[in-house]
Image (cartoon, rainbow, N blue to C red):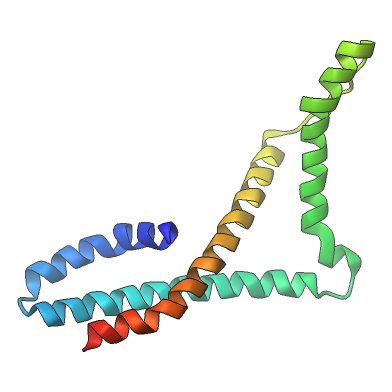
Length: 144
C-alpha cells in the first residue's frame, strides 16, 4: 500500500491539486481523481505482469541454466559476503589464515538490487492483488 501511496503522492498529487482548482463540481473532481488512480493502478499492475512473465519464462525454460541463473548468481554473491564477513575473520582469528575474496562494488550493487527487486516485486504483487480486490468497491462508490 505504501508503494501505491508514494506513486499517487508523487505523480497524482500535483494533478489532484490542479483538478481541485480547475473543476468546481466536487463530484466531477472526485470522478476524475478516481479515474487517475484507476489508471495508475492499472499501469503498475501491467508493469508487474510484464516482470512476472519474464521471470516465469526463465523459470519454465528448457535448460537448467536458463531456469536457475538468477538464484545461482545471488547465492554466489551471498557466499562471497558470508566468507568475507563471517568465515574468513573467524578462521583468521583462530588459525591465522582467512582467505577473503574480492567483491567488486558492481557485484555488491547487483546483490542489493536483486534482493531489493525481489522484495519490491513480491510486495507489489501483494499490493496489486489487494487493490484489485478492493478497487471495484471503492470505484463503484466514487462513480455513484
